[in-house]
Length: 365
Image (tube, rainbow, N blue to C red):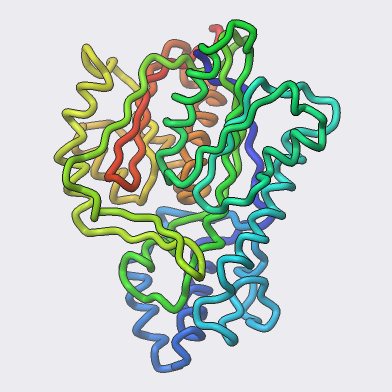
């Protein structure tokens, strides 16, 4: 099973991290309704939030983050409600933007895949953007659609597992397309000032990615050697991603890093039977800079082995399930990564779930 044909779509807006943090301060002050709250929230946000030296910029579909005229906001009309518009309004934005993405990925005249896997944890609309494009292009007799929703940052690994099953189910199947549409910027709530909320508001971004799973492909491609998903015992309270009236809310416990650190070495032994291949690159989902630094220190990895994870965090932020595919694309496109290089991928999410894969880059030279 091979992964190829990675295609990235950037959100319409990108904002420097420093400006976004300044916007968040303004939003929290507006939501609190007290100017004297400014210094308190600014100091806290800049203390716990992800700094510009880790993230340079983040992409977003909303123009809201470009100004502080609350009356002209699409979602964050904080002068009306402290949390911004409700989930129904945010879902309408999700639907409009995801429809645009599928139109761009699948214009008139392209060949449809045998299967679509639509991955998202930031919006659910039925019929989905995948269903709409199949209907519009009259592909209903050619393509099957599966929705891989609400798994969070690790969802690319289960999506690959699904795709492997689909390709194996019938010899006539040639291609499965996996499409990630993550609009994390829809789900901030400036009326919540807790530490974990400030961390997520400073970290998450929007991202879109499409790639194909096939049996045969011209290089470059990633060959899948192993995948594995496990839930850390007694960890269900460590992380959550729940639907509430204003949107989707994440909660993070302090022990997340400790749990991952304790469980990861044994997990890697089960994923990489026979040991981690020498000089492997690591595609670690940047749940935050602390996660990357911890994994690097725990496993004794060099900066070279971790460079793509840090690079994607710096250039894009955390795009939930779309983030690992961004790292894979960079590895494939980099001419300095030779053929037969092993890639160990890791991602974490509610459960507490650890998902990973072992792949090998093939570039034909």
